[in-house]
Amino acid sequence: MTNVGFIGLGAMGAPMAWNLDDAGFDLVVYNRTTDREQPFAEAGISVADSPKHLTKRCDVVCLMLSDGDAVAEALERDLGVLDGVDEETTVVQMSTIGYEETLAAAEMVTEAGGRFVDAPVSGTVGPAREGTLVGLAGGDEAVVGGVRPVLEAMCDPVVHCGDVGQGTNMKLFVNLLLGDAMSAFAEALVFGRQNGLSVSDMRTVIENGALDCPLFAGKGATIADGDFDSRFPVDYQFKDLSLALDRAGDIGVPLSQTAAAREAFSAARARGYGEEDMAAVIKPLEETADVSVRED
Image (cartoon, rainbow, N blue to C red; front, side, top):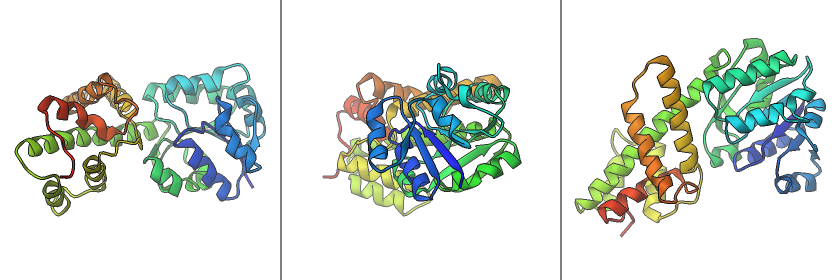
């Protein structure tokens, strides 16, 4: 059985790691803050004392970290992943980071003698727990094929998007659309509520027409209930829209809707809602219009 290391045991990473254990992989975990390692240690799962020592023990090393800086730090730090890489190691980078950051990480790993797969995921905490994230893999077909069983323990489906970097481009594509759609949905709900429409009626109309989709159904329900517990926080959506805009600038694609959406999420962050669920993008709009989009 493949030895798999997992670095990054946050809200997404922890359930992904548990799914690897459930699938029967020989799992080793590491997290910079050791309190997140404790449940794994108590379950008898091996805990490494550094990324290097984890990498030395594993054929596949998965990274699920907050941003590009965290990924670079895990790779390059003293006793980092690169210190443990050899020709038998495949590093699977699953965090949402920028395109150029992805290429830089791939270069570092390959120069150290290892293999690299770019494999961010689409989905939030619920799919992470259920093992139904969408895996967005970029890399050599044979290398991706070699880690497909690992990816399939966490993701259903796994989509091979092309070469290294294309997994990241696909993630930026889908989160660009997610942020644009969420900010537009928030505006529409505030517009309707200020016009005297009931929240329930607006949701019924959306969910029984051409605009019906899991995003609007799910976020409509949480907004109506006033539930902004974080599944995917405002801060992360702002980060991903910023990454998409950076990439668009590099390739000459105008993203006017996405730029406006990022400003909506920026406003939510500025008012202290950065750690709340992305649906909290509606709150500054509610405050400005002096209206509440909640069930009566």
